[in-house]
Amino acid sequence: MGELPIPETSDFPRRDLGEDTLTRRRRVLDEDHPDTLRTASNLATDLSALGQAERARDLAEDTLTRRRRVLGEDHPGTLRAARLLELLEATRDEPDIE
Image 1 (cartoon, rainbow, N blue to C red):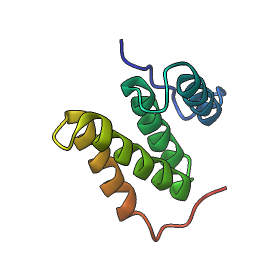
Image 2 (cartoon, rainbow, N blue to C red):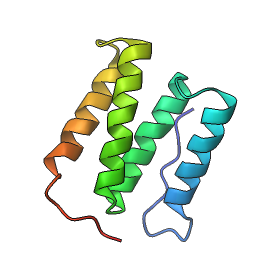
Image 3 (cartoon, rainbow, N blue to C red):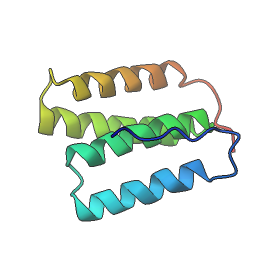
């Protein structure tokens, strides 16, 4: 079952939920578990959408490194992580909103 998108206009704290989920998955499943890596990528996307580009890029870079090591260069999850980082790098000069 996929993760449910939470609208940005929601009162629900999207970033906090993502960070809590990632913390729990790292603790329960391990930092390199595929579900943990997927959660990290989702959080990086959310952070970027919330204007926290630097944090998003850092998390996406770490996630890509882990996916390459765990899943291999040609795994679809690794390729998606590489594309996410590429998109985040394209916004490097945009200031963070906080």
